[in-house]
Length: 198
Image (cartoon, one colour):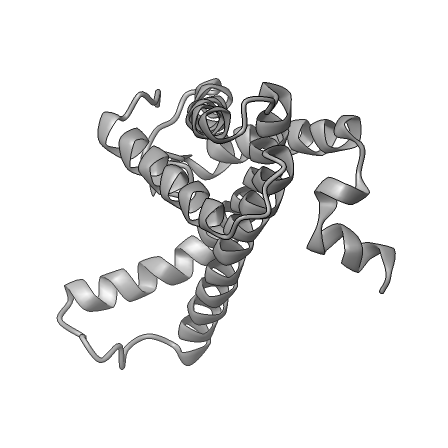
């Protein structure tokens, strides 16, 4: 198995803490700039919504919120199950896993993909429920990016579970369920609470 494949399957065992923090930090900066350029609010762990205006610092604040609150909830859960878990380990897992969601944001919300989505929305608003007035290529672009986005969402959860189980020194399958549930709860809380800036 190639080193690249090993990194994709389990970066937490094949990269140092420092390397993962750097990757996570670069991803954080990239996502923050992306929020400003593409004008959207990442209002949940893996949710994004378009807005008409966004301030230059919105990405820095909002992306940080989507790392810190889920990290705190996951750390609390992990601490209850394994007392020796370190905050840094949980934080690194979130930082690195969230990079996948930044890629999803890029794929779905870049101006090119958005223009294709807008064609579809306009067709539906005009009563074309069968999308006959939409170019097949536009449908293909949206279909492919949506499928890739879904695959990457699954990969995000995979990385989260693998990383958290290492951080918790866990071999129990039920802990994977708890990890997924906590991150879904975090996403729901963030979306409903909405502590974001625009």
